Length: 113
Length: 111
Image (cartoon, rainbow over all chains, first blue to last red; front, top):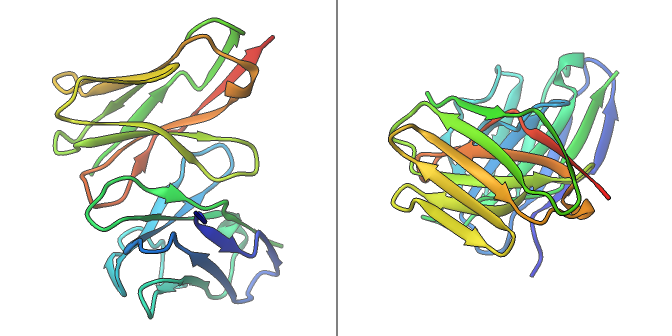
């Protein structure tokens, strides 16, 4: 079946602009996670949704970052007033409710000029 | 919170040799330990995992061992092939929450 999909695959923006990154989880997966991966590093947790609600947003670095999942399926990560330090690959993962295995999408490479 | 350390950062082996990657974790409440393989330009792919009630798990050429007392776990790849070349990440989780990843090991298998 279809895996986790993320759009766009690449996004180039200018400092100060607003961006939205989209994640489509595996059908039926109730848990959805966002991670950020800088070059040469492991993924770092940002936010976790169980259904429509954010169960844990402790990884969001500051209030410029926000994520929603209004219908419990697709999620959008929103970044306001982008900074060059936001440049990274943003990864989305999903899992079946109650199970630990997380399956990742291909990521969105964000470049802030 | 949880902290995961991973060694070595790079590993070069000849085709057919074995490769071992080791990780340690800090939070004794962690009970799920997955390993991911990441190829260039792709997302991490789950290759094997182990839960805290099991000491060893094997799947064809890959195996994972867990020592709960010492808080370390290892990935073993036997009969390595060039297509095993990638970055490997270990992670730890208290089930149902976020994964905490190690910094990764770049494995190079030369033929």
